[in-house]
Amino acid sequence: MALRPSSIHVTVDTVIFTVRERALNVLLVRRGSPPFEGTWAIPGGFVDERESLDAAALRELREETGVADVYLEQLYSFGDPGRDPRGRFVTVAYFALISADHPIHAGTDAADARWWPMDELPRLAFDHRKILDYAVERLRNKLEYTTVGFQLLPRRFTLTELQQVYEAILGRPLDKRNFRRKIELLGILKPLEQHRTNGPSRPARLYQFSAGKFEKLRSRGITFPF
Image 1 (cartoon, rainbow, N blue to C red):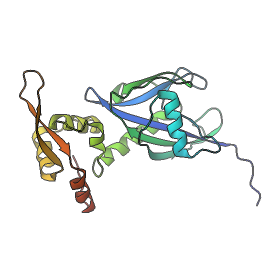
Image 2 (image 1 turned 180 degrees about the horizontal axis):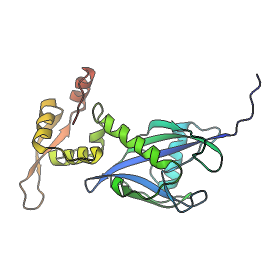
Image 3 (image 1 turned 45 degrees about the vertical axis):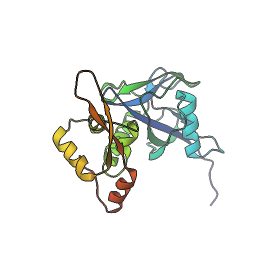
Image 4 (image 1 turned 120 degrees about the vertical axis):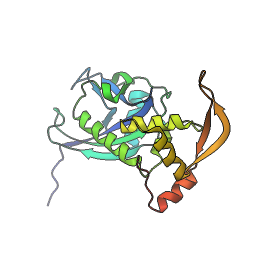
């Protein structure tokens, strides 16, 4: 059977998360052209004919936000027939985590780029709210079996900073005593001799994450529910 010319277009969209002021934030761009001109959206664009999906996601992210050299993980494909008023579009969504101090700027296809707290999101273009909700759910699930919570922390961190990252991702407060007890039982942190002083409060001990211990626990099927 002969193949018919395809009228389906393929795009990529990349959800980038960070934690700012104890809240989960997502990087959005303001569209500079129709459709949805002036509306905020997840960074993304078309896949070139000679380009892999991963390469397209990295290129579009760099061109629209200035973000480069980040690890991207493929999230899901979204292809509802009515998701784009221009025609039949299928998008492959990605997500990644970066530090809050990573420089960003609007590129050639975007009028603006900025971080938005998840509880203060504007109206989004296309079906991007659906994509974003899916990405948040995936991120929360990954807390149980990956190092995702530690990717948003500096190399040395306090237990309070670690708990704040988990609370930001989960979207709910955690009992301090119970959280620290679980972390201590897992044995995945290395206490350091250094302390951090924040104002008049008692100096807080710094820790480092032990990837080796984490992998040993995960190989035994141990998860990390909080």
